[in-house]
Length: 160
Image 1 (cartoon, rainbow, N blue to C red):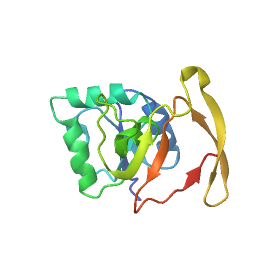
Image 2: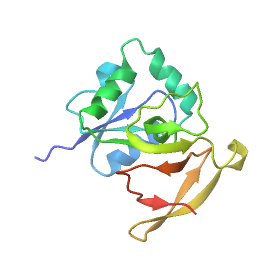
Image 3: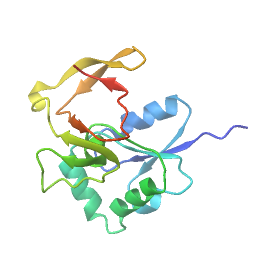
Image 4: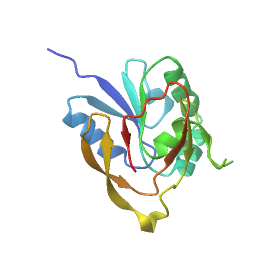
């Protein structure tokens, strides 16, 4: 019997249920991560979902069990981490402009601008094109933009 890979999903706020449903639909075993003890070494990856980055940082830092530090260690140990929207903001090397309320983890050698496509009222769906010429629709809800790419970063999809 084949074992399904276990993927953690940070579940403090944001769209973690959508990520869990998608991961389950492709044959993984998604596990909601709410505390440091939920993020275990047998997990093969972690998703930092969309949500509100300021709130996410506050909740991560407020966790007395050290969830922020546990995620940093997970990434430093070479485990793959996917960040979408607010998760991407957390993974960045830096923010532009800097924001004292949002601390980044530095996993990706990128600089990110929060809310780059406008306020909540400007939310929209747009098509993005992948490097393999596939196009698919994604939601932009106060979405961030990557403003600088550092060495070692490969772009897999773009929005014009």
